[in-house]
Image (cartoon, rainbow, N blue to C red; front, top):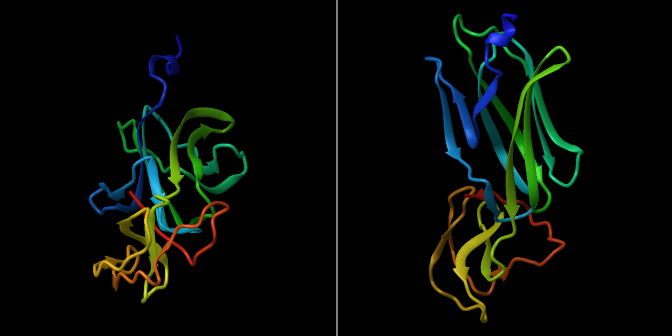
Length: 205
C-alpha cells in the first residue's frame, strides 16, 4: 500500500461569499458582510465594489495551483477568474484557506450564477467545489427613487399597487447613506424586462 493511499482525499470544509475579507496579522481570516445565496438588486447594472470568497480545504499535503471562476449557470463563458499558487502549508498542517477578492465586478441582469473552485497538482485535480447564488429582480410594486447625492436609483422600501402618493418619509441611500426625502412626483416603479440601465445599484441581502 502506498503512503498516499493512507491519507483521506482532500475535501472542502467551507465555501463562503462576503462583501470583504481580511487576512489578519495573527493568521486569522475575517469575513465582513456574509451574503446568502439570494441577492436582490436595487439597480442595474449591479456593481460590487468587492465580491469575496473564502474556501477552506482539509487534506492537502503540499502546495498546489488553485482557481476560482465565476460564470452564469446557463453559460459556460467565464465572467471573471482568479488563479494562484498555494504557499507551502504550515508544518504538520493539512488545513488550507484560500481567499479571493474581485474588485468592481458588474452584472448586467438577473440570473443564476456559479463560483467554481478547484485545486490541482500538475494535471491532476485534487479537489473542487462550487457556490451557486441568484441575483433577483426586486418587487415590481416597490417604489424607486434617485439619490440626490450619488444619483443611483434604489428601492425606497415603499410598496404600493395604487397611485403614487407622497408619504413624507425619508429614504436612506444604500450606497452613500444620504437621507433623501420621498417625493411621489419623482418616484417610479422598476421597469419590466429587458431591464433599463440606471446609473447603477448595490445588492441587498
